[in-house]
Length: 415
Length: 156
Ligand code: SF4
Image 1 (cartoon, chains in turn orange, green):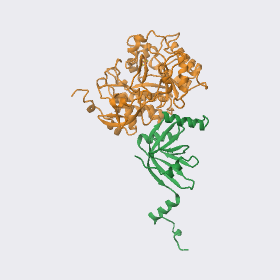
Image 2: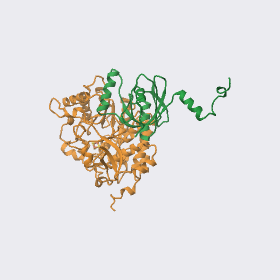
Image 3: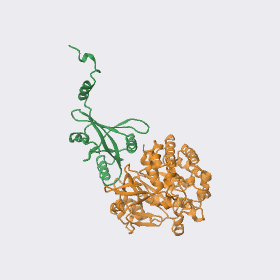
Image 4: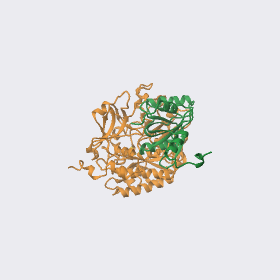
């Protein structure tokens, strides 16, 4: 039996992890495992997709697809399953299968139905065009409750070969993107698209902006800040209040940059992703972030951001599990968990919570083909992060199931 | 498959003039009751409970119940002061889609844009009890004749 065929014998199953972690909801463990192992669709599941009703359009980096595959799923608790299509060869584990059961999409594992899901529905604006004739779905992406604005397709940490983060697949887009304008969006298109989206009452709860790091400017990152100011002002023109529910996932800006951003825009939340909670691993895994900001300075900027945006409005993303990557990651899951949670505790004492995504060893990344941790590791990581957030009394809403949906640990803040 | 709700009880549950309360418990072990502003009964007998506040303790407790299969209770009283206790388990949190948006628009209209709609909870009913005091008292005396004050059965 090959290594990939007997992976189930080498690690605890979903059922065992549920029993061993009674404080974590089974549905959250399934969510984490689906993110870890990926999914495939059967033909019967795809036959349930109606591209007039369900969201099948994808605009991500240079990918602009309008096919018949749902972009993501939601289970019955209303959260999201933002999943990747996987094969056993890529992850070393069998992906979950979405199949039809009595005319309803269901997640299956080993032939057993596990949980009912539904496909994300298409927002009204997806079928509209801006006055310049741009299809609106290409301007702003939608999640069930969130508008996603991807400002640029190029991350300039890759300007220096090997400078980007080692788990990141954006490297593949670098050569095509490096000479493009700093912002890919036409601001009139953007203003109109957000305006059209807001006409659908009850659909959207927040606006998230993100893009690759832009290192140029008088001070490093000044151009990135200026771009976000312009974009946020265009978005903000649609609101009658000065501030509007919003989150910027970007590089860690210095005091001058952050205060400028806060003063000139209606931004409410800020998420500079530190990615790995350990100085040494950060240096190895995110060399560009280390060179241009540095681990300790990144933390210091996070703490300052809490003074600017307020407690509960600043958090940081981590790629859960990447701290175990080989050869320089933590050698055991116990060690990785202990160090990661200790560092998360220090951040939380300064008012910064963590939003952990589940590391996938993506094709196209330096870490492709690496083995990601067990589900038991993710169960303990998400529970630990949630307990730390509660203990330090940090509100859970900035990156929760409605305002994001990617992080099982922030979902736990619902209860 | 849950328990069916009678037409009479359905009318009580959906009557916004009557007192209806949802009682739930959650991760922190805090039992919490709150007034129900809107509720409806589906053809399959499940109850839809409309929660306006995202940050309310009820909302937190309902997701806890959905995730861990724990019962919540709905208390309702009809115009003749007959009481009902309905127990059930939240099965679905509806936060988007055509139905949610239609209900959201109704909430906006009714409260003149001052109140949001967080979640429509679909609750599968597990039991329905009539908890009218006179009936309960009669039942208690029949079942446990040992537990009552003697003067109530003393000769005049
Ligand atoms: S900051 Fe790191 S993870 Fe983000 S796009 Fe750049 S290289 Fe990728």
